Image 1 (tube, rainbow, N blue to C red):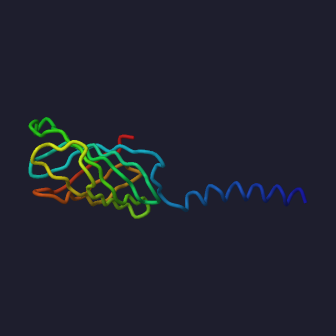
Image 2 (cartoon, rainbow, N blue to C red):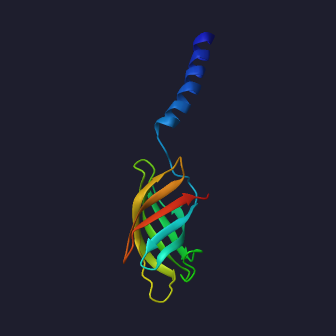
Length: 140
């Protein structure tokens, strides 16, 4: 009887990690920060995207843009976004919500693309006037 109980304990400890791995990649439960660049009509622009989970794959985000050395005349600005960041499908889809700080003449843009949790990279298309792509790396 003791041998059977000991065997059950060993099997339980072996199965729990296997079940955790079977779930696949997951997003961190807290805020994450991604930094990089995107390209729109104003040229190459710095971007910090701060993402906060609000549901299963639903997130809210803050899109903060700013000048970079090769394009020093870009003003700083930011706005909130909402959308999908799914670790299982590795898809990101974010739409603008409201301005936090709006520079004169600037419009909010949407983003869609893919990301890799393990490598900490996100890339895709920016949907806005004269926009093309974005590339970000996870900072935390």
